[in-house]
Image (tube, rainbow, N blue to C red; front, side, top):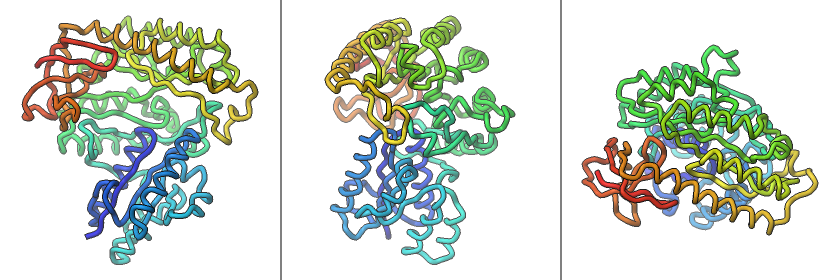
Length: 428
């Protein structure tokens, strides 16, 4: 019996693609073990969005090689696309799998199986393999799109993953049905540029059409959108969310900056006022929608006035959660060559300020639910710190509460009793 272990860095799409590889190896007879244990094959699905992400990937390569010198180390993901030749020469790496070299996965399997089984796997694509489970998750990611054509000045991903590639509606529906049969109550639609779904098919099927198709599937209780660009939030998407009992009223809309000068330098194709206009439109049609976002601090040329404008937009939007990213130089992007890079201490100070704002906004949003009922999808594992049941509400509040194990992986009503910036507790 041969074993394999998986390490995944980066975004939801990477997590989905790891699951595809996991299922393909399981189908060939390999048994999964923890990365902390010894395995015959380690698959490291890398990220290249920042230089720190690449460094973490290299650290994992060294770590697993030290742990088990005899194991085969397979590197895939965006870092493998961006610096293929460097990784091939990296000590400890046995295989690098890129979109152009997917057949190498068969070579790995060939060491453990006959040539016929290896040849079959060579016909598969790790970027197109289908999933039926989502290991370690109560909610399943469902990838419907790959690639991006936005070319933000700080981002390498469009160069790595290429342009928009939309999955066929039939494939999406069949995958959702498999996940439903295997007990998943919620799917999270994900992609590199989710809102651009269908653009490569001349709009024959758009994101709203996919949502509507999944909304009609029996057994699926929740549909959630992952990150979506503000320009892709169309009126029909908003109307669908407002009418449906299945689609979560939660929008993750990256802001990055609330200043028009910085947005233009970032090559983000919207203004702060347009962003807030979409937020307000959603608020006018949906009760207490949850808005989460990404903000980058310290982008080249960001002055105090630009940063203050970002804080003001945050206040007006009323985000329930903010993911804060200090600007990191990414070689090969236009932003790396820009002048006026911010001092590291300035970036650190700004991150602290916006973290404080984020906590205040999160608390203000959560207070609106005190003594109100939230519908919570109960995780299959208890919280390891409190030993309480926990799960996410339709508005992406993580709620902790006491209850029996029999309600795991079901949606239950929980009355919210106490909130803090980081914690929501309630009673069934």
